[in-house]
Length: 559
Picture 1 (tube, rainbow, N blue to C red):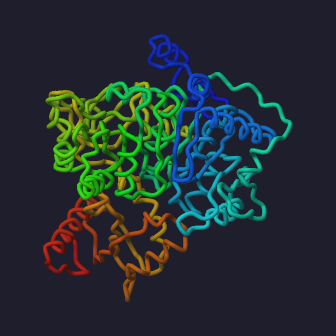
Picture 2: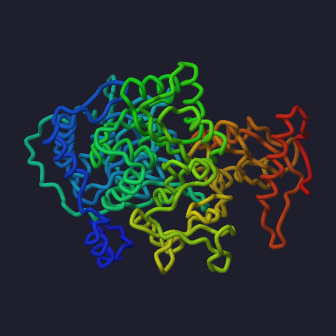
Picture 3: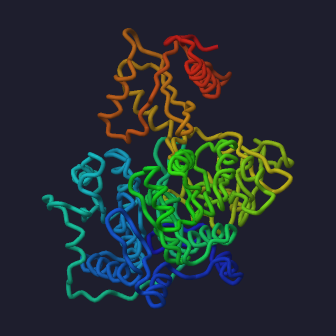
């Protein structure tokens, strides 16, 4: 382990890092090296498009230098954190480049997060600057940023992006681009430095800050792009949020490290996506299940088989095998497949792209490349192929650790394996198949939701005695949130009651329960723990009954 300029501890030893660099697995370059090289080789080539503008390699590098100069003039120094909670806008890529120029750590925050999550994240990582839209999707992010500032003493600057008018106490993005006379320091050259901290929901209630370096992020991209045979000039469509690891890698990093131009969508619309793919000759996208399903429907309605699309990597939530088969029957030259990974271990399962692997693409979660993966039982012993075990993995695209060293010690073992908490098995062909989760997470349309976080808040509700938040099946999103409640007295709470209660606390609306199930008592283990697997089965059964037109009872005693 070693100490980074950020003050955080990097899990990789200098010996490990040297071996990876010597083997060429870690390339030892930063995104600034790539952006500078691209601007010199193809200055007028478009690197990014969004709904408002297109920008060339030369233009974005100049804008990033101006932003870096403005941040440096205001005292930002290497190792400090710059956060952004932005839609899929070009400005997010500019912030990412400017941060790398100064050796800053960038902290993307998904736009769905509200006061509670944003305040916790900013305080935990010690962010000095926060970039936000003023109002986005009818929510006032600028006003929220001013509220959370009271809970984040290190936050020095709040910057409005695409502001129609200035807000008191906040800077505008354009203000930071204005000439200052300040000399921009030379960019740091340490590709082993932490460049990225992203918060991912876990089972403990509070999200954990995952740390990555320039090298680990670059290796994650390289492992996929090489396997998928995607090269310079091939266009990426990125509808996933750039503040999520998928959108960040393929929307903000790949256009520079792989010279693959990206088209950013700040709001998903399947018909628009079809137009963008055909208009710009899009070759690649990486998104969750609903995007693929709706894209196919929209393409069929427009009578196009998306001839330019070569790769659709689908993951982040449950991916039905039939959907992959349907896509591969429909796309004229493309291949859809399932992938698997986590923010801590990026893209363990990378899909299947070769002829003759169609069944593997549909029925597994990808060929395991770049990672040493074990499937272990409760005693930590490896199980044979085909047997279910917890998935643990280590490799060069693995996180450098967590912000909290205690969390690093819990999740990464002495041999460097990250314990994912996911259950699955290895096929004879070297693929991974996910069968379930040990961790108590709900994956809603690719976004992780901590059941514990929602439970902790609901336990404050005066009408709730016990609560268990579980996943319930959803046709479009894979899973959504169901609150199982044992009421305290009468009348019991309603769904509207608990949604309003959670909303008043200020959490993302995606975390709000979409169903309430009332119980007189919960199924329990002999040790006194709530049997959430039983609750999930009960809820799933009731959903199936309702879909079949059979009424279900609002109150029941668990078996």
